[in-house]
Length: 90
Image (cartoon, rainbow, N blue to C red; front, top):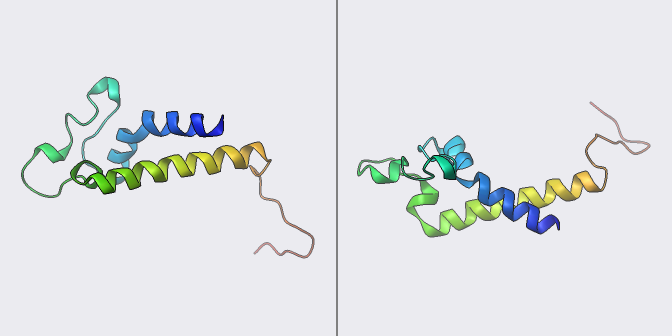
């Protein structure tokens, strides 16, 4: 269930997060996705996930991995900072 949610979330937010990280012009699927991405402009810089398949796969995998980590952490109760006896908080 966590994997399905992480993949769905990554697929839905891939382009907006791409724009957030790379300032490339990508947007939500319903608003055109990569239609306004700077990959369509011949001058650099070009969006790494749109320009290179390997970079796009790596970016997508990072989104799925972070979604899985967040889902499992919240489910296991790691949403708060917990210290063990003897740990110091500086």
